[in-house]
Image 1 (cartoon, one colour):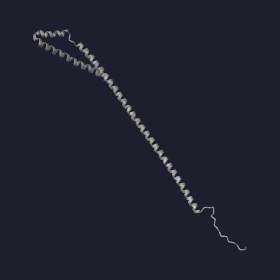
Image 2 (cartoon, helix red, strand yellow):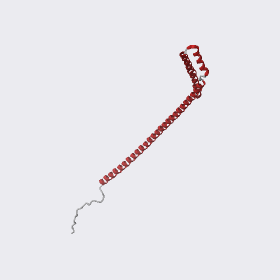
Image 3 (cartoon, one colour):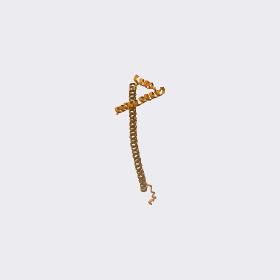
Image 4 (tube, helix red, strand yellow):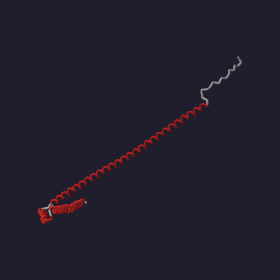
Length: 169
């Protein structure tokens, strides 16, 4: 026994990992970390863009609302102007109707004042008595009566209308 027994040397792998595997694992973890950071940055940018779009839409909506309010205001002012114009037109029509009524009343007064009295009727009889004949006297009398009716009345009506129109100015 004095001889020594040589036992073959067996290499038992240690519980530590190989340095290459450690390097690959570190690179993998770094890649996952950078991917996560990039993903978070992209999500943050998209949320900022969505917020900017929402803010832009809110500004546009506010401008549209202001424009609609301005249009409604213009429409309301136009309607009020039309109503005022219609009221002024009605008032003017009422004034014209009142002027016409006053002119008609003045015309009636003048017509009653210009009615032929018994003296005018007597003159027609003298024209017949002078021998002009029955038909000729009638024609002369009717012409004379027509001239009296149309002549003075038209000038008196115009004066009354002019007076009324001047009072409206």
